Image 1 (cartoon, rainbow, N blue to C red):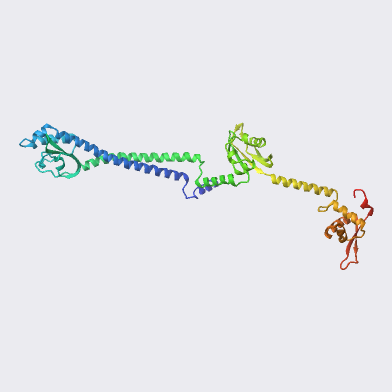
Image 2: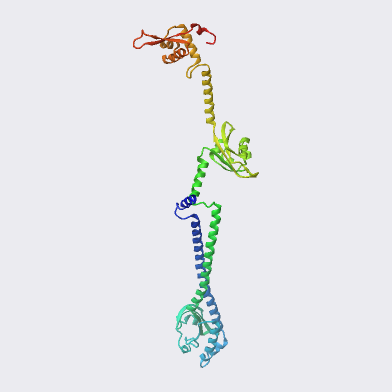
Length: 424
């Protein structure tokens, strides 16, 4: 429980928000932005589509009316509105339009949804259709702002009137709003699906990275860098197929190769037989292995578990210098043991000792100074050898009171014949 609490506290050290939440929020934000952009684009397209559809329908209706012989013929009647108004209203209702207004060359209406407006002059400029052109746009008339289409009515080549059809702008906007609800609904569904999809993708990603947080991944990367370039111990990782997947600088240096040569190569091709044996069998305590002129200690996790091949790691430590030190210590211990066996203390030479014995045989009752001068050694060194002879009974030390100050020491062999004895 304590470890879980500690792990939870670690997950909030680098900003207070776990990676899982960050991933979901970031992906949800991306989905929302993309969906909103797509929705706005779809809305703009839909607005243009609705207007274009109405304009196409109004143009078709207006041109059909303008080309009807009965309409042109009615212009010659004493009361053109009597024939034109019923026909225009029928067409207006059948086409679901707000109005169908037919006017003569002077702009006098022959039809209108409000019969009281018949006979009045049109409220908007008819100059464009009277010039023989088609007008499409938004204008404000007696019924309010509307999308309208105006076309000329020809009698041969002469323009005798105009047909104006349209719908209120509010009607077109209401249809667009109705379609917009579907667009917004689709956007919300897309966002919800995107959030759930983001949560699923986040779960997949976290499983792939073993539920690690960013600071933990950073620590792993730093540890990897340390392993690859900072450790003095060699590290080689081999997969279940026997291919080297990771090798650090130290391992390459110990094996006399480069990381480029070793990485991706087969372990059987680049490792010695002894190292392969350690890698295959596993070695927890470490096994000395000689590679070239180096003495290495190799450890391994083993390349098999229950007869199944698995990934394995080989650790190499250079023990060449330690091996040399041990050899020197063993040699020194052997010399010391040899000297102790012969009764010569550490720091004394057997050859020099024999020279002191010979000099002492030639100079009975000699002082350390006199022996040192005879052998060209220091008084202190001569004294050490003389004291050794005195301590082993091979020489006799006596005090010399003839010297000034405290008495000096003089030495003579206990048995002068010993100097000439075989092996002395």
